[in-house]
Length: 529
Image (cartoon, rainbow, N blue to C red; front, top):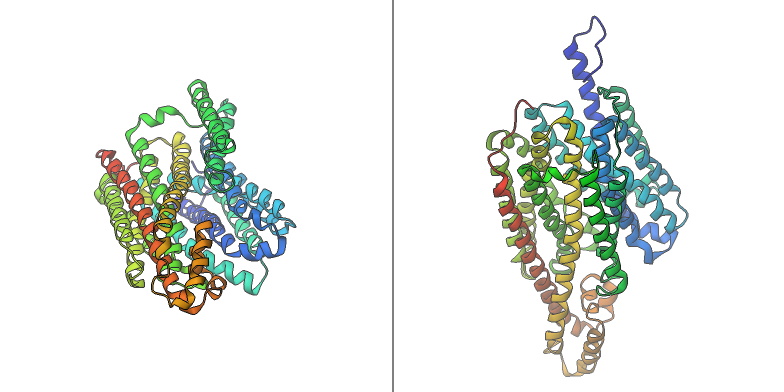
């Protein structure tokens, strides 16, 4: 509810200008969160050059992912209990504090710690912003605005890498973080000044045990997935211990939610068909989408031959169609309903995965880009619906927790997807390398046979070294020109077949999401919500 309007001013005028400023503040915040996720990755090589700690580089991303994912359902529930503005501003404040500290970091451990603080704030910003959109607009307009916000997120993802590269090259890497401050302060000023909410002063019971349990379950699960196969073997006590701890915290979470007066994630939500189906589809979207984000750049650079300098722009085609489809999707949702649009979008994504599973070393760049355009269009149709469907199916008092749940399950799905698809690719690549080891370099001049034997022995000891010749110019220089072409061709074929297998598995995953979408029922957008 808005505050009383000053006498003499038309109520509709006051409401419209407040809404316009609130939307502007939310857009600044969305831009901030979206750009930060891509701009930092571009700057990381330079940051490591200044701070050192190359072995810790992945933790800069992991720390943010851990804290943001774990905090999503907590902020969603708290915003339902105590108001959106309070927790949006709190999340924004934590994010900006973390940004300022990241910019001032003197060591890699400091940067990792401060990125974790940023992540806590990030766990509030995007889902609470989407919830505020659900509060201030009726359903008919909400569909359009959620599509616009999804489009803005995609556009920011395109601009992020270029912005990060420009700052590193022409300014200073610390401004990758400092640039958040003026944008965030503008967003905070607009939201603080113009967003008005009715107050509920009744007693509240915060589910501290449930909050602690969900944090423990998420952190240990993600640590196991991120470190498994890299820092420790999958069957090591360290990884098995992390999964066991995650399972124990998950059981504790279920027990806590069943007993709590106001649970962080009420389990009765899963009885609702729209909530259950939407989050199932979101989970599979995360599984598949992150496969594209991780493995398409590898394919484009290692197999098709995109230069490393263009790596930041590889995802641009997919993001462009995502932006366009998101804007169309809000309009379309009013006319065809959730199930039709979600199933259509998932079907298009599945088609895109099929096209990507057909990519080979002989595929043209145009064909590769075309498959990405298809996936992006499907994602743009589905992503806004994930939020719209749950917001339209629940009262305002539960809108925060159901909105944050869509981001939560999508994030968990993405992390599991990257891990599973990475294991699939590595196992397939290893088997292909072993099967084709003796044939690498077939037909090279006899004078170079001893060199090829040595190279084959090196690959046998370290199969991944074969792929270094695809993306590392120094590795290419170490191989005589007469051997480079057959070695490159073999490496391209093996990498291509491995990534084809990844996309076939991804196709099955998004196909399962398509089937899940069919169970949505005949729910349609409620124009009166």
